[in-house]
Amino acid sequence: MFLQAEPAQTLGYMVAGYIVIFGVMGLYLLSLFLRHRNVQRDLETLEEPEEE
Amino acid sequence: MESKPAGLKFLDGLTVALMLVATALVFFYAPLEAVMGQVQRVFYFHVAAGWVGMLGFLVAAIAGIVYLRTADRKWDLVGLSAVEIGMVFAFINIVTGSIWARPIWNTWWTWDPRLTTATIMELIYAAYLMLRAGIEDPNRRARFGAVYAIVGFASVPLTFFSARLFRTIHPVVVGTNQPGAEGAFDMTPKMLQVFMFSLFTFSVLFIDLLWHRVRLGRLADRVEQLKLKWMA
Image 1: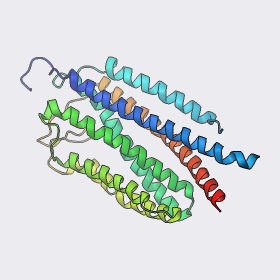
Image 2 (image 1 turned 60 degrees about the vertical axis):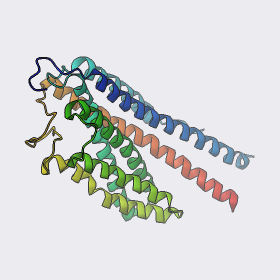
Image 3 (image 1 turned 60 degrees about the horizontal axis):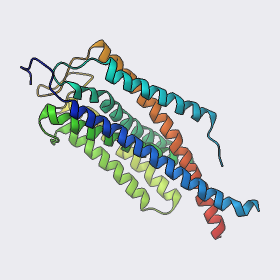
Image 4 (image 1 turned 30 degrees about the horizontal axis):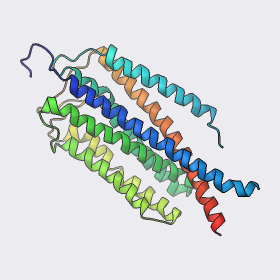
């Protein structure tokens, strides 16, 4: 690698790396959104009888 | 329906804008590294993710200390949230490191001191979540969680300094590389700018996610209290 004239051909690894970065962050954001939505629904259901 | 605070809306917008700029800088501003080629661009977010992981565990340890002093449940929630976010980003750090290692070290994985300590750190915090899941009493769970987060934090400096203290092939950004380090490179001014901007962006992202996660935890607490009230 150190005797090469041009940079190593590593584009595929870079793409894989960024798929992991944005993929995992995206999944975490989705999990936060879904959990928030479910908790909000539960809260509304439990608060409804109190308001009545 | 509880509306999102204005500060959080602003922070969401700022985080998205910073992420877009940081991504553009990584792909269009940072120069191509002469030896490793395109895979070196993983470095900017790989290190930033590792930084957020360690920051999360630091916040959890501090929240643990504050909880033990005040017994305020809010700090237990901050600790739990920080660990959860820290684990996500430490995971990104480990996996992207493995992807980077394949063309540079010619292997996906090696039991090098840095890789080993990073994995142990991640497992220690996975055990934190398992410990919490096994305790029903909220006060006891918070107390145990706080002590565990403080003790578990010992794994963080150990991971950080492992590439400096032990013989390793993992390069370091700040400090002198070990003689056997492979994948080290001299950062040009442009690379340094992108690196620092990425660290800043991920720090803002951490604050934003922490705020969202703590908010979620508070809502979940309210649901639990209402459920207990209905059952009583």
